[in-house]
Amino acid sequence: MQVLWFKRDLRLSDHLPLFEAMRNAKHHGLVLPLYIHEPSQIADAHTARQHQLFVHECLDDLQQQLVDVGGYLHEELGEAVEVLAALHAQFKFTHLWAHQETTQLTQYQRDQAVAAWCKSMGVVFTELPQNNVQRAGGEKLNFQTYLDRAAQEEIKNPTGRNLNVFFAPKPPVELNRATVPHAAGVDKPLRMKGGRVQARAVATQFFTPAKLKSYPFSISSPLKAWNGCSRLSPYLAYGVVSDREVLQKLNALVNTVHGQGDAGLIAKVEDAARFYVDRLIWRQGYLQQFENHVVLETDAFYSNEPSETKHEFLAAWQQGRTGFAYVDACQRYLQQTGWLNMRARATLVSFACVQLGLPWQPVALYLAQQFLDFEPAIHYGQVRIASGTSHFSQMLVYDPLKQQAEQDPKGEFVKRWLPEFGTADYPAPIVDNTESLKQGKARLHAMRQNRLL
Ligand SMILES: Cc1cc2nc3c(=O)[nH]c(=O)nc-3n(C[C@H](O)[C@H](O)[C@H](O)COP(=O)(O)OP(=O)(O)OC[C@H]3O[C@@H](n4cnc5c(N)ncnc54)[C@H](O)[C@@H]3O)c2cc1C
Image (cartoon, rainbow, N blue to C red; front, side):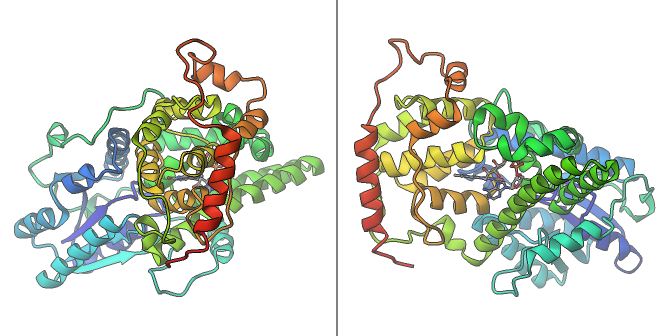
């Protein structure tokens, strides 16, 4: 028997381990599809209730997808090695399939523990790469080549087939999800919902000529971004869709526009498509960078980085009570939706780390809990840049008043998300903008002379 272990790859389409397990069923035995609710991962400080509920919605949807092809999803509660050991005692499986983990160190270490257990039990553990990420130290592939290939290749999608004969008999004991411990925090009222059906709806809305054409002009302001960006990030982060599927969707749209023969429209859509692909290339770049430099999550790059957390500043920033209306409105919006456009994310981090002098660690952790699409590689890469503490990038500082003037000139965003603005209940700015920018930049310049790594 074989076990197919789903982690941050909650889909059937473009799922190589699934395909390989099914293909090998004749030789290695029938396939048991498994998801493990791991208490240690649920208790990890980065995991919030919104992530957990999003995952549960994805699992419901995955379960349905599996039923539709004649299978089921078996869920277990426990640490991965314990769960696998118990299943092994029961079913004596010989092969375990999964995608390679290219996210947090804790998850990579969990996979190493699983690999050691498999070795000790004589179970063949095959971890296949995804997102074109090469295991650290491996040869770095050209992502453009991957994209070009991905655009042409036929994506393996079992939907519509009956694969019943390849599935192992369903284990008799079903998990009651109510017994799964809750992650910290509360759910967000306006967050996106999990699952392939939802992902498809979000993609269908975005991949139209009109939307794509205006995409490059809609990404900077939080006023336009919710409708103007693809918002596929949570679905990519949990592998509900693959980057190759997104690319094919984009290509299909470009081809349709070509078919319509409107030269003006073709040029605009092609430009916007390139702009979009650039972001997918960045995504892959961050995943690979993180794979090669795991210390991004943990280590200081400079000897004199801020290390002391001014708790009243951190609390004011988290609660949207800094007296900087644009920053506060962004926090409030994020608290409700679990999503924010890139520039606004960078502005939040820059303000916290450069102007309030907060260390990047508590800032990164808080935002990880807030972003539904928390993707460790992108997140830590970007936080390190916006806080000025990454030597992989130039210093980038975002003036919050300038951002407000550019991105919300009429104050509509602030008015909507920060109702107390302009009332006696709204605090005065906790720092002077000009002075804190000046000091913050000077501190960064000095800090960047003291490189550790
Ligand atoms: C401080 C900070 C933290 C961030 N944390 C995360 C995170 O945890 N998870 C996450 O997915 N993105 C993160 N980003 C990147 C970016 O903000 C989001 O990917 C984007 O806002 C997601 O919305 P979207 O899907 O509509 O993006 P779109 O504009 O539609 O882009 C499509 C896809 O490209 C990728 N992408 C877009 N922008 C970037 C970028 N700047 N860097 C890398 N990949 C990108 C994402 O996968 C995204 O889904 C962060 C950015 C900053 C500045």
